[in-house]
Image 1 (cartoon, rainbow, N blue to C red):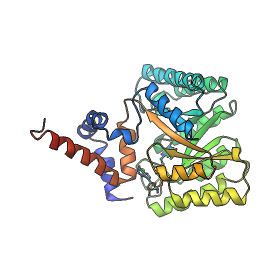
Image 2: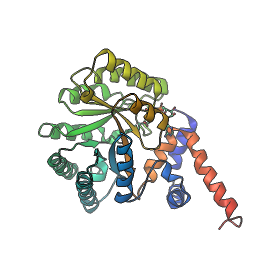
Image 3: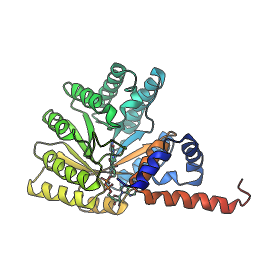
Image 4: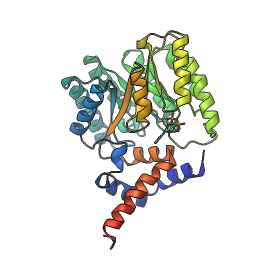
Length: 313
Ligand SMILES: Cc1cc2nc3c(=O)[nH]c(=O)nc-3n(C[C@H](O)[C@H](O)[C@H](O)COP(=O)(O)OP(=O)(O)OC[C@H]3O[C@@H](n4cnc5c(N)ncnc54)[C@H](O)[C@@H]3O)c2cc1C
């Protein structure tokens, strides 16, 4: 889907580049465009501001692909603390979790157990856990884990990606179980064997899936910044007279604030995906790949730094 996008994905596999970006991103300020902070306190303050602007939030502690049980346990404990903090600060927000952060890549049972413990804690606070969808190697396990938890817990949701051929089947299965489903286009680089490559095909599938997702009864999250998809969703919501609790819109912190304002002004529920933490580089690189023009604000801040320090120090 574009040479520039492929090139950014290629760069994101090069430690020399990602280490450099990770070192400079916060100090030069270009990472803040998408990541409002590195600590829980920082993100809670931003969440409160967004709530005051009539936006819901979903907090995500950045991190993925952990490789030890210790790290997976620590991530799970952290999510429980976040749920407590959301409750204590009376925030209108939930959490979004990546399963490779809970050990999916090396121990499926551990991952399921940790996710269930988080979901149980969320239920105690009357809150919801949304599971992000990652690379296609994890789709089957992710769908199976959330489906098995949904048999016991109603406060769990999952993202499904319109670029995958398999998503129509997953949507039917999970929708019939009453899960909250967040429909996204898909942010990873996937091969032709599993995913549409052309933007037009992804968009067409998004429309098809949206039509199905918004068939009542539904618990839908329409997660896109694409004006055409938003218009289509609004048309379906109006035509079908969907109840306000049947759907919400979701957007990522820092992207298309004009559209965010418009949705809120029009009275729609909007949730902002709010990531925080030190391990922000992979997330940041995906945001660049979605819109290669974004690399300009990185390059510009590096040039500015260079100009301020001509000897290159
Ligand atoms: C709340 C939320 C949660 C998500 N969760 C997941 C997930 O779990 N798994 C997953 O694979 N993906 C996830 N995504 C990312 C998603 O898959 C897309 O990569 C991303 O949303 C861009 O696609 P789009 O629908 O906005 O449409 P596009 O057609 O890509 O973009 C439409 C317009 O939005 C703007 N835009 C989009 N991206 C950017 C950007 N990075 N910078 C600046 N402007 C931009 C541009 O104006 C662009 O023209 C999530 C997205 C959202 C909004």
